[in-house]
Length: 326
Image (cartoon, rainbow, N blue to C red):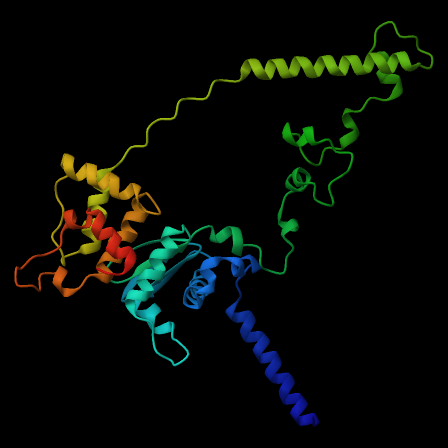
């Protein structure tokens, strides 16, 4: 390689390194490859793209003419955009239906949650901070307090610092030997002990005193322990589910207004069968329906029939969404 070619190669390498630092990086753990679903290359590619495009810090972005306030581990997109970014070896794009099926799979597995409107969907990576925080050049241990290091047995913790100090709330910078008694002071603590050099009897009394102190402390803690309160039943805010449905369908489907006894029963049963049995999971279900629905569901049929809130509460509708047969 000539000097000119070598210099050009070095410049390209430096530019590439600078570009990589500018773009940043994410963590992919090898355990991911042992998952059964990771054998599906489309799902694996989708998961890597979702992690790569998720925000690593809170920020505001513009998407579809609207400002979106994203938190850690969130991204905003649409199924159509994701479909265009996932191609097979021949360059053919994935269909929206296949993207919806993959997203529904990740929701069922508890890997993501979704929310959004007709303009876009916010996808949130579950436990993003547990896997992606601490990827800079600063060692993770240096960002922890000395108390954290001590509780975890990390290197750098003074070996003679008793763990009880940290559990009792004693400042970490307090020397560990401040509570130790010198030979003279230990002798003075035991009434009637001769001032001369002590034998093994002194040590025996000290041990007995220590045991008695610990026993009294344990009894006091037991006496002060309160019985745990009985767990209160989780309230089910039906109105929030109706509002979420109305916000997502917009003016494309009839709004739900009343929550009667039959709807309450069906709604509670439906939410309980979702992979994420809460309001976020219900939003994801309605969004998946809106993305998979055909013109038939919006009134383009010979009966002028339109899907409504009760139609989405049917278990059969949920099954069709999961299987991509709506």
